[in-house]
Amino acid sequence: NAKLRIENRNMYHLKEENLSLNHHVLSLKEQLKTDKLREQNSRLKLQVTHYKSKCDTLRQEAAAIGRPTTAAGVRAQEAADTDNLLNEVEDYDEELAALVRKNVTMLSEIQEDLSDLKEAHYAGGEDRGGGPLQILTIDHE
Image 1 (cartoon, rainbow, N blue to C red):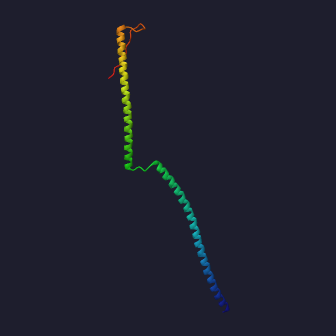
Image 2 (image 1 turned 135 degrees about the vertical axis):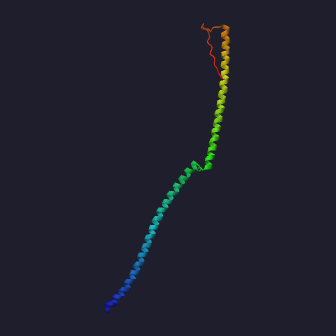
Image 3 (image 1 turned 30 degrees about the vertical axis):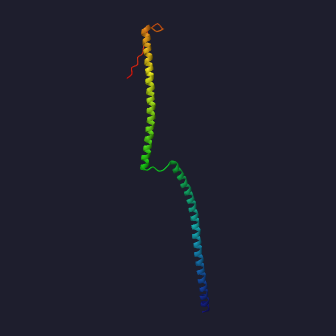
């Protein structure tokens, strides 16, 4: 009987110790979870910093490129390109017209020179080399 009483008292002490150890295990588990969460939180903060810097870089690149092109943006760009092309064509047309005017003037001067040479040929009949002059004629339409 005495042994049973001692065992019975020990059982209450063991039960209290077991309960205390269970509380300690639970607190250690919570601390472990907290540590894991802190570690994960730290890793996530690093990733957020990395992605923020990447996002800033992409924003800067996008700002350098311009806005994304929508259908309206494409039409506006095409209209601007067409206007630029028309301006270039007008410039070329003006240059071409000036070149044609210059060529017409030069052609008129050449024709006058030929006419003067023909008159000189018919007046003298020969050039200084002793042979007959050969006159070139230029046909233009």
